[in-house]
Amino acid sequence: MLAYQAKEERACDQDGREISDIAVAVKEWSTEFSDRQGSKDVLLLTYELGSTGNVHAALDALTARGVAHDGDMDRTLAYSLPTGATDHGRLHVAVILASERKSRAAKGEGRRLPATLEIVHAIDGRITADLRDKGVEVSYRYPSSTASGGRGLTATLHRMSRDGADVHMSTKTQLTPMEGKAGKYERGETRRWIVATDTRSRTREGAKIARLMETRQPRDFMHLLLSGPADVDRGDFIKAGASFLRSEFGNHRYAYAVHNRHDLKAHPHIHVLVSMKDSFGRSMDPNIRDFTEWRHHFAQHLKERGIHLEPQKRNARAGPPPIKRWEWELFQRLGAAAPPSVQDKVLAKIRDRPTAPAIGAARERFITQKANLERIIKMLEEIGKDRQAPSTARELSQDLAAGLAKEFGRLQAAVERGRDPSKEEGKDHMLRNSPITAEQAVRAGQRIANAAAKVADKITDATERQAFEDGMTIVHKLVGLQLDARRVSKEKLRAGGQTTMSTSTTAGRDRLDENDTPARTSNNRAIDAARIEQAQDAQDHRRDELKDRKQSADREHDKEREQPSQVKGPTTIKMRPPRTNDRDRNR
Image (cartoon, rainbow, N blue to C red; front, side, top):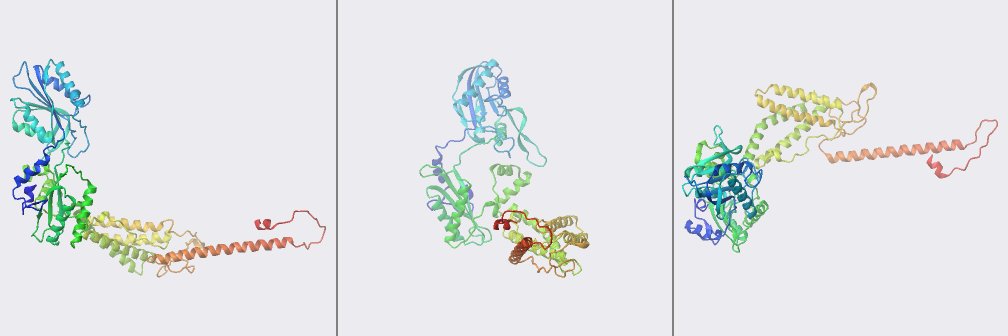
């Protein structure tokens, strides 16, 4: 990384000094990692045998019933025994403690064994028991040792062959060939035995097994990238970066170098190496929140020097995607035969080519749909200007055309600013505020459907025609939304089977009953809200009038009953209790 930093100019350390000799810098950095402990991924057990017997059959039986416990049959095991040994020999047994995934894309699968005394004793007990069953006696046990990562596994395999012994490996990891590609590493269903007789074969087979190992190597340093736009002032940008590094990592050893300092057409960026341990021996463990906070702090240092930049994440900016070590090694080994996805990522990193795959794909989709959106908007505008069309169809078309134009402009602005339009929050631009009846909606939908059919017949390209029809499906859904329960007139059919219309239209050709309804608009919602409130007040006023009329009628009826009857004849007098005000009010 220090060499990569210095490809354009020399890197500077935390004290502002140039790093002229990389070997000396590496030696200084290495002193901070002298007491580091790697993850214990490989366990090596060594035995002195009194008699060799059938070692292969014993270890094969062990892998069949489980290495660490019953059912642990997916774990890789390797052993070596001096060639030609009959009565005694030194047996090396290596067991992968790290979890082994089903494929390189799988995460968190498999079980990792900790290198504790209980696990070591359990594995040792099962090995010695199977050896004893096959007539092999263990005379002495050497202290166990562990190794870390893929390199540790390869070094362990080479160590097992020091006495000229072949290394036998039992694993389920396999490389499945794929046409036109490098192949796929995956864990198979059946176990296979491999015999590595030379250094090259041991290295090759060890690398295959290491592909699916989930190692937990501690990090010695981290690599940060501080990037800016091409039109930024280089001097202020570099000063802001140096100030940010001093404030955030003042107690850590770090080195940074500037790329594209003098290339005004490319975006400048600073590569930073930061030691994970500070001068007090404390190690940091950064996460996504820390990176987000650093991003905002760097933006503040830029702002102090007159540079206003928005702190953006990698998926929102135009930067080359990160590459992994296996992708780099695969590209170096296969070159043009590497998978196209690996080639693109590695070449983008080498050439420092800004890329944003998600934004680019969204931009291409938007450009493809641009012509169809313009066709739909133009068609709706023509319907809105056609005096021969029903007025409801004209109003709906005008509203839909205006709403689609606003949506089109908003999404186009998102694409131009580098945002994904598919993730933009939509707005309500295309729904009318005035209610319509089912008959009006059907007539408007038929008029728009007939116009869409004529436009679709003129499109020769099948793909564009299909896209246009998909767009019209959305338009028909918007027309159907006008039949929502809150938007459909609830008045019943009157004489003659006609429906009362409450929508005030421009020409009034499809309006059957005006009822002195004031014209409504679909653009000013404040006016519509005031009119709704006014209608509610009028309805309350009518309800109060009806109530007063009913009370007056009740009082007149009571007075008539209290007057003496004018009919002559025998009179019957009935005794009844006096009426009270409450009783009159209840009546």
